Length: 124
Image 1: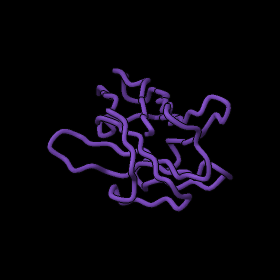
Image 2: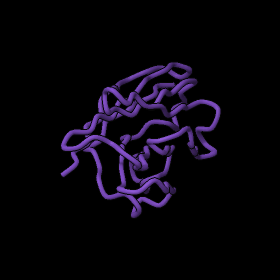
Image 3: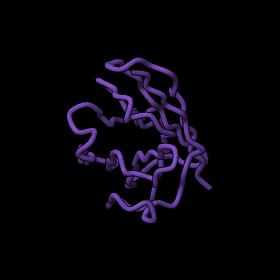
Image 4: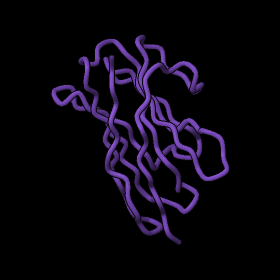
């Protein structure tokens, strides 16, 4: 059973940066797809970014493209989300997700494993 644990959230001012981490336990990532989603208060879960664990393939939502970067550390079995130029509308609980195949997508139902979330708050 894969367990995902996010960390790195916090309070930051507009224009600031944060780096979120998602570490997996239970097994080592292989030819899998991983993603970041977020949920703002009173909003639906929203796709943020995705990546294939093997290779360089990534995808981003239009709202974060150019500001956020997803990356990985294979040795640490950890995925990251570097968030720059943060805006108040980025305020949300951020979740990492994973699936047992390499094809990622923006649909939450594609992903089998989820973390508990980490809060990101951007003040204006």
